[in-house]
Amino acid sequence: MSELTHFSDQGASRMVDTSAKPETERWARASARVRMNPATLALIQDKKLAKGDVFEVARLAGIMAAKRTGDLIPLCHPLPLTSVTVDLTARPPDRVEVMTVAKVVGRTGVEMEALVAASVTALTLYDMCKAVDKEMVIEAIRLEEKHGGTSGDFVRSA
Image 1 (cartoon, rainbow, N blue to C red):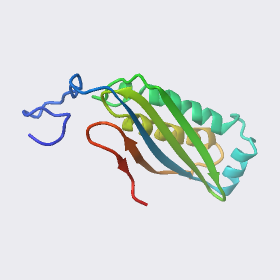
Image 2: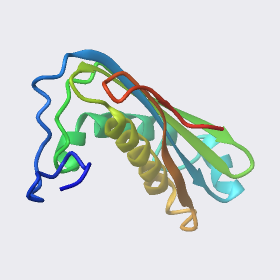
Image 3: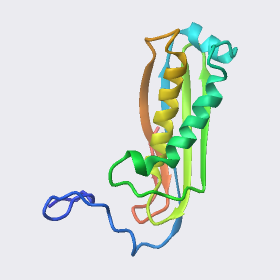
């Protein structure tokens, strides 16, 4: 039918059979940005929002989300992740950058886990701050790089 691996020759949805692939170390890095009013970023940095430490809650949400990717994305394999990191960086005057890394020793990649972690981290930032800034914008959710597997490495060009 096509080169898309999640469809059979007849066009039916399917989970890709990875049983013949060797287990290898694989990792992926993804990012997202959240733009906001400068006053909102100042509240985050000063830890003056009523909901608490915004970065730590968002970090935990991103890690938890990566672990649940197989439940959220149809046809994604549930993976025994070996590591998930979420870094949040304030970029004054009006932006937070999210960077996530997911790792596994397995038969399929962790791009979706890294992307889900970045997405949910950004959504949690929004949720934590929406009472003071409804104009926030989540943008540029993207895979930055991935390593391991038969399709080879990928590094986004600058």
